[in-house]
Length: 502
Ligand code: DSN
Image (cartoon, rainbow, N blue to C red; front, side, top):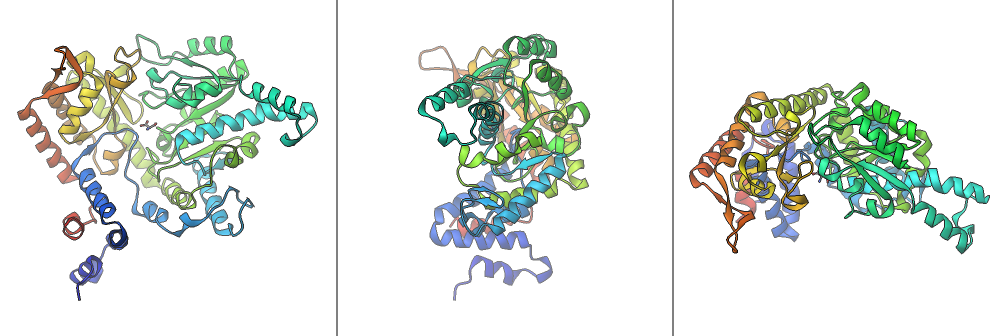
């Protein structure tokens, strides 16, 4: 009888050397391949791709096998709309236990009064947070004025007045081009459509947040919500100062710490730099520096707890119990001393990489970094768009993403910048010595890249001419570097390929 891949592996491996993680992978892939061989092939190819590319995407990481295992099971079968002990479905006792565990881990890790671990993504978490704040600060007072707690008792005219009031509130967040996120009031996003949204930009010269200017703008604009946080700002933020601004203008202070939650969890950002100590509501994804499953959570002061708990049905659909289980595992991992060491190393590596890039003559925005990311202006040094830089890097085995720089003349699509992060490489075990190798590698690729003419003869914003010799050298260096830091080394890729890519 033909042996299955799992049987083959077990028969050829001494019992003491069997890897539980590899057994789990083989078992899962065998089951998947039985139904959908193409999906199993894609999973193996993704492992191969991630192993052979230097991951510099600031918002990605590699989570543990325990986190992955918590996600891949029957918990996905359960509906649990509502929140623990307040569900719209029966039989939720085990999901309650999981959700309560994840929320407790989150509260204790971050020192928060309340945690809500259901959001599926950072965008969902922000939307839930916005509506929870609107509920607590606009809807509840309106209902109390009208003498009822029940929306369904409002007349059509009263409901319409309340809807108008909810829809006329103000949000002040960081400008997208300064490093803010789409969901912080960018016109293409619902956040700018549900709020009257304004944004604050970084200082044109320094590229840094100017707190005095933000204060002035906030006092003029008087937002309901003052929002701090970013996707591509390389510096620490003084949240104590933001709190004072929010208090002065009477705003609810909200922080989206999706990018740097790992640095907060790992106690790199403490005191004035710890948003949880100063904000009313804090949102974060769980898969970036935090190194958990793809998803998000909300932390808040008790005042907003009831409103946040109503994320479903207010905004979100049913929670994902399997992902909440994985969040519980990841949050527990983040409480270990090893995670603190990791977080410090993420920041140390980013600083080392920024300094090495500057020594290479590259244009590092703000002249360095305090967190896990840096932004290079490749238009300034190489006359390339960010998109061209991104494409050249990809062709050399380096994955990163293009990003606008402040006041970017190339707009949000082509951009002038490259955003570079160290969370994933740090998880692989790389340190400052490797950052010293990576900076010249980035320079080599950029030096070997020229904008190619478009069909009309003008220089294209997307097409590139990549020097073949530079590309070969870069690819060799990437392979050599990754050969020393194998992703998930216990997974035998050759065996997986021979079993599933035939
Ligand atoms: N996609 C995330 C990032 O890369 O920053 C946020 O949208």
